[in-house]
Amino acid sequence: MKTDPFILFLLAVVGVAYFFPEPAHVLPLDTLSSAGISLVFFFYGLKLSPASIRSGLSNVRLHLVIQGFTFGVFPLLVWAVRPFFSSEEMWLGLFFLAALPSTVSSSVVMVSMAGGNMPAAIFNASISGLIGIFVTPLWMSLFIQGAGGDMSAIYIKLLYEIVLPITAGLMLQKWLGGHVRRFSSFFTKFDRAVILLIIYKSFVHSFESRIFSGIRVPDLLVLFGWILLLFTGVYSLIGFTGRKLGFNREDRITALFCGTKKSLVHGTVFSKVLWGNAASVGILLLPIMLFHAIQILIIGIIAGRYAREAPAEK
Image (cartoon, rainbow, N blue to C red; front, side):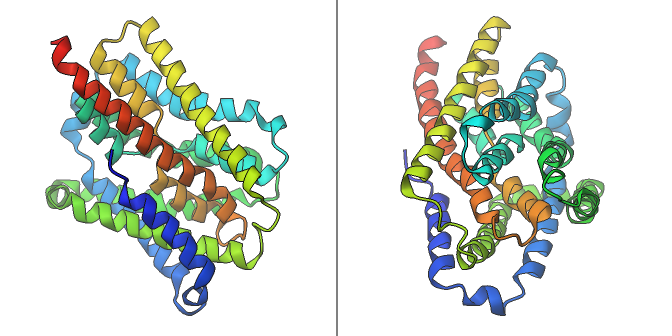
C-alpha cells in the first residue's frame, strides 16, 4: 500500500499553521473557506448521477444496514463510552466523527478494487452525503444546544452554505453534470484544497489560543486507541450483520467498506458551520483526521486482500 499523499498534506498544514500563522491574519480566509464550502457542495450536486442512484435503489436491506450503521450505530457507540473521557472536547470530537456521513470517492474506489457491488456503493456513498446534511447537525444539536450554541443561526448557515448550493447543483446536473464528472480529478483536488484551507485556519486559532497546551502525547495515544477500537468494532458488527442477513460476497464488501467510512470533506465543512471560528475546532477535527488515515490504510489493505481472493472464488 502506498501512502496517501493527502495524509502527508494534512500533517504539513498543521505544521504550517503552527510555524506560520500570519497569513490567517492577512488573507480573508473566512470568506474564502465559506465560498469554498458552497462550491464543494454545488459540485457535489452536479456530480450525482441519477442513473447510478436509480440502479442501486432495489437492494433495500443493504442500504438500511449501511445507513443504519453510519448514522445510528456509530453515534450510539460513542455516546455509550462518554463516561470514560475526561476531556469533553475530545469526546465531542469523537462523537462528531461518528455522526458524519460516509465518504464518496474512496468508498467507491475501494469497493471497485475488492470486487463489491458497485451500483449499491455509488448509491450509498452519494445518498449518505445528502442524509448527513440534515442528520449530522441534528445529532450535534443534542450537545451544542446544551453548551449554549445557537442552533437557529447554525441551520440558517447550513441552508445558504450547503443546502442551496447542492440544490442548485442538482437542478443544473442535466446540463453541467457530464462536464464535472469528466474532470472529476480536478474537482477532487479542489475539495481537498478547501479541506486544507479550513484545517489551516482552524489550527491557527487553536494554537494561538493555546487550546492544545493541556493535551499530552499519552492523551493523543488514548484518542488514537479509541478511534481504532471504534473502527474495528463497527467493521466487525457490520460483518456479523451481513452474515446473519445472508448477504452475498459483493454486498458484504459494499456494506463493510461504505458502512465504516467517514467523510473528512463533510467533517471540515460542517465544523465551520457548527463552530465557526471557535478555538476548539482544532481539537474537534483531530478524530476525523486520525480516522481518515486509519480508514484509508486498513480498508486499502483489506480491499487488496479481497481482490487477490476474488479469482479463486469464481
